[in-house]
Length: 321
View 1 (cartoon, rainbow, N blue to C red):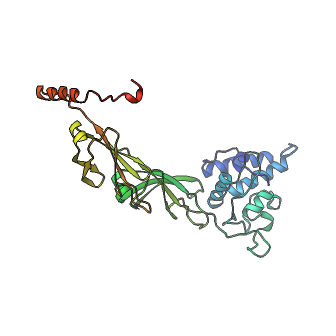
View 2 (cartoon, rainbow, N blue to C red):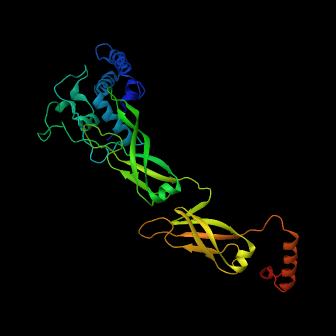
């Protein structure tokens, strides 16, 4: 089926107010009226203009048409109705323009109930239908701090939905909800809130709201999958002799034993201290040996003594140096 662009027929924009649509229709109806126009295709154009006005002058039918135009029209000019589409408004009881309703296009009849079947009820052989069209789904991002994602929280979310106004034009509306965020949400995961998207047409169900979780960067922690990583500096003597040190976790401070002879990059795993879930993550403590910026004379003497005692140790042996 070919798609009918009613806005193009009348020469108006898709945001045109009702008064502009009426003005454009009157001008073109006079221009192409068969009694006055001498153009070869005046009758066809007159009928196209009347059909376009029948749809766009009515707020409910215009809102339906805007949905069809968005989801059904294809680049090659053809048309495929959205799955499950049927008009909730229908055309019946007359009230047409000067155009002959019996000559409206197949597109008009199949999408809106059809002029030549006007007044027929659904199921009685006519085209007047009452099935509704579902509203748009809305997608939004929700930024969370790491602590909020791990522990769960309540957040206020604002987003925009498009709904038809009294004239059938789709306009944006700000919507705000209080949302309960479950514990353990990870970066990139989605929360679906059923029925919180854009309202449907003709009493159809509302669409859904999909929130994509976006974790804000943390000054100390890095997230890898379900694990939480933190780099913790240790002194050279703590690395050499072993020690019990305090390390941060998202849930608070804990004590960790540093094994004797540890080096920079060594990882200590704290089971179950990462993201909760069916397979809970861990917290991984990455050790980093840190040197004092300055040494006392006594400390320098000790390092010199250590260098003499460990002169056979070559830290660059793996580089063949």
